[in-house]
Image (cartoon, rainbow, N blue to C red; front, side):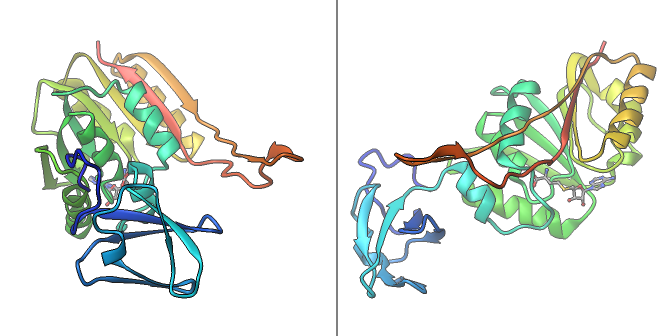
Length: 258
Ligand code: SAH
């Protein structure tokens, strides 16, 4: 992405989101001689380069498409994945609940595909990642590298966080793995007083075990939430919720070290 391009015209190397007349979207990286192929026909990258965001184009088969720069949410849905990513609705909630701020020292585990890492790095956090799978660590590092065009601090260790945390004086510990209760004992030492421990968990059984462990280690200000997002269908004659929704993703457990 080239967010520093003040004229906002598309350049070779920029990432572009194409949206067709049926609201299907496609992510591509512009090359001088590139061609984008879909069932709707072909678009020459050359016809996008030098144009402004929002440019409307016509494919070789006569269909209309529109070109924008992708948002973080667009990229999270379309980027290569190792592990399952956290849904953008939950990423937004995590950034606020964990109060991620510029310069915050954050331990994140596992890093998976790097979706949450991207969002926290863009808030200015300095992340030390613990990931047991080196193939996932590589996917996450590549996704972060392709997304951010400003300097960032992202150090991913290939390490099982259940065996311990090396760092101390940490501001935030953010976990997306199956047994976060096993990390509480290390978080107690690693986190600053008042530091935030946040975990994302799919089942309430796991939440229950974690909350008991947090109480055992005298963490305070414990909250458990889930975030429901319902999209709506809006036309002149019909305004109603969409028929389908994602009913469940995960619970967010936040607590503070004392
Ligand atoms: N939040 C990530 C997805 C994480 S998926 C994203 O937004 O993209 C869960 C990850 O935790 C997987 O990559 C898995 O390999 C890793 N993991 C599981 N147990 C772990 C452990 N004990 N230590 C470190 N990483 C672990």
